[in-house]
Image (cartoon, rainbow, N blue to C red; front, side, top):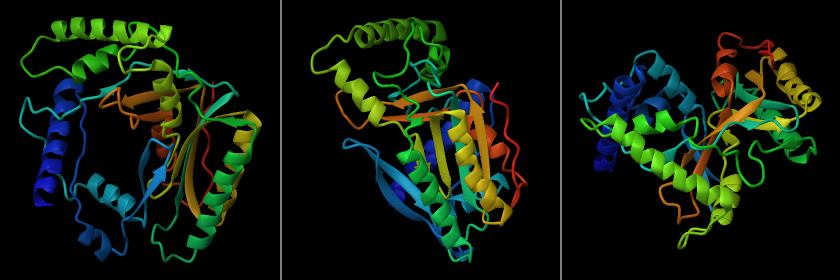
Length: 308
């Protein structure tokens, strides 16, 4: 266990160093003991959610994850960036698909979180009922779809995320130009295979794309519901009305952001495995915009950013 903790700490430190050096951004990372979380009155409860028959991923409740994030942003439990040239293992991480336009009218990013994260709070029952109701509305509505269309997202070559992937995969001290040339060849091959549905050895592109659709994380729970859905404008209004009413009663804080498309980032350690995972977010702010609209808004409605 100690070896795994050390490995995780090193990976976080290297990721922070990599983000600063390559992208010029500050990434805060921290190592928060579960004992500290429980001493603060929260917990870390973990469940596995089966997104498809091939993939399951973790969801968290108990308030501990959100508490830990707040303390990290306050500068506590921080892990300093690793040394210059330190690189995390980003094998299989790519962004080779294009933005997916909303087919129903709106790509809606939703965050709904309990106003009081303590699982023993008096409003906990009402909060759970609200989350269940939102999920039920989404699952039962004919005016809602996953952001990823059948057959997978649009493809172009070279992909718009080409430079980001090239920089992410560049080893320290090597030529970025050579890395780009190598990636151009790789992405050209994958573009032709996926676009023309050409089977190569054991790789079946139709099966892979079907798995990609099923393995997308359009719905998750990390001490709060997070969803990105493709829906009609009236249905988006119906969904928004749920947290608006609950916020007025002090049960939740929430943020919603409407945009015209969604983006996908892929983690595919091996194209021969079926458990590859695909992370979804809105293409014009997404969860970041929704989260920004939550700050300091406890217990009252939050204005939506424009869909235009």
